[in-house]
Image (cartoon, rainbow, N blue to C red; front, side):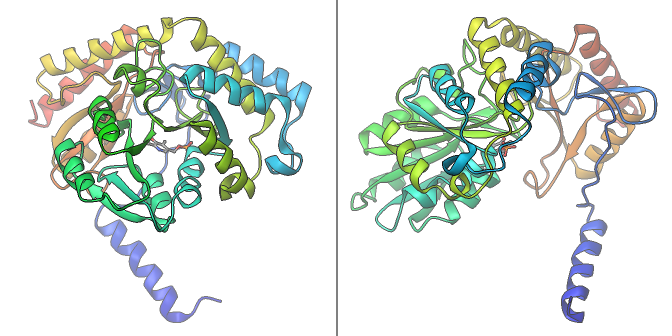
Length: 396
Ligand SMILES: *Cc1c(COP(=O)(O)O)cnc(C)c1O
């Protein structure tokens, strides 16, 4: 039973979230994920806010593989991995992920949130220190909190600050540097080459979360480690099957075999949570097969991203320099971001405004995300409509 004071506090929190404009509402999509989606109104809207970078969420090869795996291996396994939840295809996906990422071994989780949640507490303890980029993803922050290691933060992407902190930590058994490979609000890349250099100098271990990179960042889509030319120098990479690799669900940690061995024995979200559903594993295998055979889809995505970034900048919008398909349209003011997103939806452009506390104060924006599925006509329509609305609102 809820006590009167608890109930009153909960009501107060909900009310103030609503008053402060922090309430998150959800649109209901009644079609598959795609470049155009149906929000139930009969007319489709252009989706510029999915993590469907490569358009694999409804790719025919992936759907076919998922259906076939549903028939050959069933819907679910009703078990964790170490009791009776490991099929041949789970091992196959772990092997294929290791091959794709150029790592020694891989362990699957139900989600990347679990991969990050189950990593630090399991591997690191009181003798160790973890130094984390201040803008790291919530799942890294929570995962690090669960560990008994000393916890420090360095300024965002600031290698000097990171090094200054590492210098003073010579007494620790293991120093651990933790960073997103790509930071999701800005599409900024970690300076992984510089991080690798100082990690070597101070014998620090590197963990990166490459959720917004696996499948398309780097010349053949292997991730931030490929783009920054440090394949083989990153100790652990966490990632998701829930974004570019088909967008269903599932996560993984990949890297040094000795560490993956320990995770398999001791990581709590792995030991105490259900195995990934077979159709999702089948779809994941098909996604890796598709991306291993050719870089055509990611090349196409990158071309369209450059097109959109350039044209939006030419139209007068402020877009931080970069190359990632996460393209933030900076509006700075929270109300402008919300109003603009609402106005764009009326014009059949589906985007979301982000403001404090999701991004820093006065850094409100509309975050757009390009997909290989978008046609140049789709992008032109978006650019034209953004510009029209921007002029109407006095932004341009
Ligand atoms: C999306 C994301 C996650 C969570 O991935 P799931 O597989 O959906 O749990 C973790 N880290 C980062 C950086 C992400 O962008």
